Image 1 (tube, helix red, strand yellow):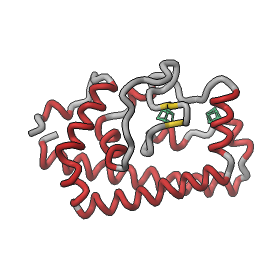
Image 2 (tube, helix red, strand yellow):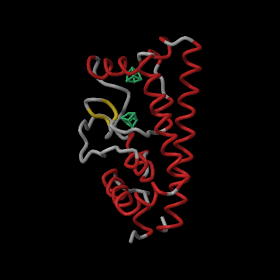
Image 3 (cartoon, helix red, strand yellow):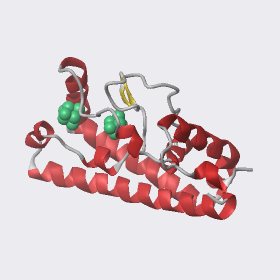
Length: 175
Ligand code: SF4
Ligand code: SF4
């Protein structure tokens, strides 16, 4: 049985948050996935993430960021960004099939950055929203508006799922 204190994040290291998220996942993932509202939101978020991925691929953003990271000395995913994540956001990633890394692969960058890009599927608003000047200048106004609408759906659905998970865990596990 999970103790309430195990859900608290404040001052925790990223390693501790990962440990707590895995614990929550092991003890509650089946229950969470069976809950109709949460199940529906997970499915919806999967769809939103796929739409975002396709849009970023089509607009060349994935390729530009890959080139920036691999050939030009580093992306904008700075060290310490991982500390803005809380346990529930990590739990959502586990529910969406992400395998959270056991160590910091690139200490000069965000904990979640691997040689193949970000390992997470559900990220911070800042990560989803941020478009650097190079990317912005390569997009037309129409493309930008379309991308922002797609990102907005991803963020809104992720927020609803986050909220639903938190309420469910509070009610059932006292988190
Ligand atoms: S958003 Fe811009 S700075 Fe960040 S990785 Fe992509 S190209 Fe590089
Ligand atoms: S996109 Fe991923 S690797 Fe980059 S800052 Fe956000 S969480 Fe970290």
